[in-house]
Image (cartoon, rainbow, N blue to C red; front, side, top):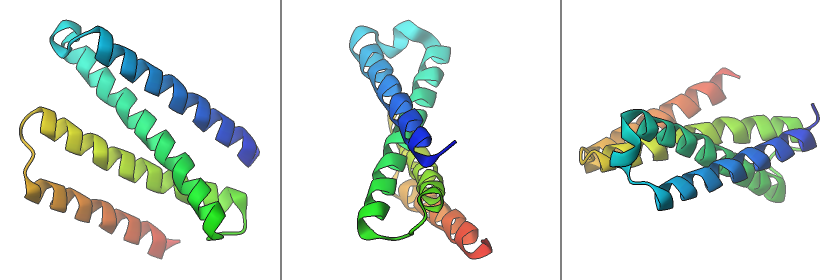
Length: 123
């Protein structure tokens, strides 16, 4: 699939998950949807954040001229979007459980940075 097809797919997934997240936030309370619903909501949040961040990072890389090949740029943006989207989802999840502390933010960010450095140096 060409890069434009991936962009369209990412944009569709981003819009759909954003609409689902906003509608469920407005219409129902977390107590009404239960633990499974909250888990699915966080999964949708992860997918939506990762998709939006992937699109943003790919656009920024294209504007800054980081990589000339569109497919390589998209792969790098996809990896970083997944890492950042996962990090933000974990931070929000810990915050909603009232378990978030500053050291958790720093440690989880360092873990994400180590994963990124490992993948970058390995390839």
